[in-house]
Image (cartoon, rainbow, N blue to C red; front, side, top):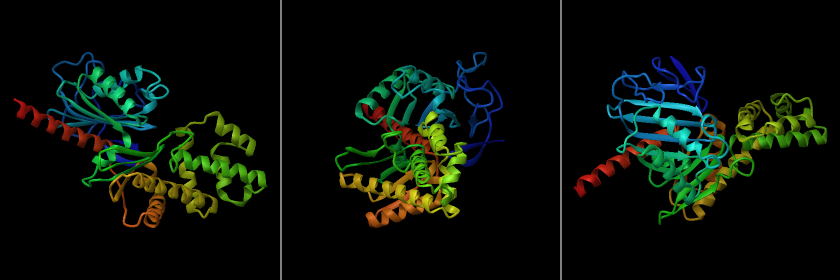
Length: 363
């Protein structure tokens, strides 16, 4: 049995024992899993010696996050398979900076089975924020996979992860973005600007605030006044402020900083006033972001939140909820604890059913 750590949640899932590993991963990193069905689908590119016909994929959901890419597929025999890989395994630079990013992502999808013109794919993609970006990604993936492809910003997957309509969507993980839809169907988005300019309330934003607080404390000669400061020095293996700044800057990225976010929460739980203040300010920024979306015309009285930080930090969820109740009375917060990819699968299934119905009506 393989236990995969998805967004800091331990979920037991059956490990695939037969066949070669995914071509983008080393043997140690291979994380292909099968949730149901006796024999997982194969693709010639990942198993050139396999005999027999492949099982074709009916629907595919893709969740491309800043850190991980989660792909889940249902094939024609109703078996479900999935793969989770670091986004860096297929993405070089930003999404659109290397056209082969789409080639590698398509290969990862095909590793789960045969993609046909009847396959319906929905991809929620971190970094697809404008209509132009969405159209480009749809066209590229549609061409490479020769399938029905819908691309949206990853925050929109939360909308389809529940039965509530309409909603305000809030992603709080490595990055952070808040979005909603107006009565006219126009998307409204707040933040999601990425590291280092935005993503208030995200894991890297929390660590960035903790680093700044530690350096400021060092300037005042007060590093020993709060446990958060020594914890940050330890996390970056620094002996002082100058070394901390150098160490943090040398490998700076959203993911590199974000992985230390648990330190901020641990120190707050241990009684650090500085850590508690950072968490409260970040929670306030998220609540204010939801308010901005609504003031700009987005409809819905439920904020649906997902992402590893808010899912796995109850104190953070409570802080966001408290600020929402104060700023937006009557607006609820619902934290979705299922992986966002399920929203993509649900959406793909709805699109497949709608396309089938339209085909019948037109015949």
